[in-house]
Length: 199
Image (cartoon, rainbow, N blue to C red):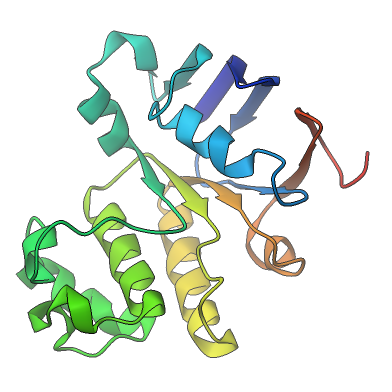
């Protein structure tokens, strides 16, 4: 569960919404509307005001690293700080069976980051986020670099995790994706969220 109350950042908001356990909220809107900024604010990566909670955990009451483990952000461009892929995982052996679930080669964890395509990096970053067992997953264009088949694989994995109670807030420009995975869609424009596009 994610509960957002009075969240403001850089002229955006205030935002008030709740995402239930196992629910996906899709946020759409024009480029530059602040969708990525909203996700970064929820993850407490940028200065903002407001109150956010998940599963009894108040954001202001916990250390930032603990919050970001519970509320994990997968940005449009993931960060990599070491040469080898496996170094970026807590337990690469446990993650290896998941590679096929997102259409990755079984040896991908043994590769160097430099050889990864953008799509491969993004899928590995998703597995890295899921490895933390977050309560909430914030996704910024999670499948924009992927073909239709691989997109379907990623969406199936996300649906499986939602069935286990994971809450998701997803930013997407894919007009059809919310119909496949989200239970609600909100439109962000002029600093405001509306329950339907253009509403």
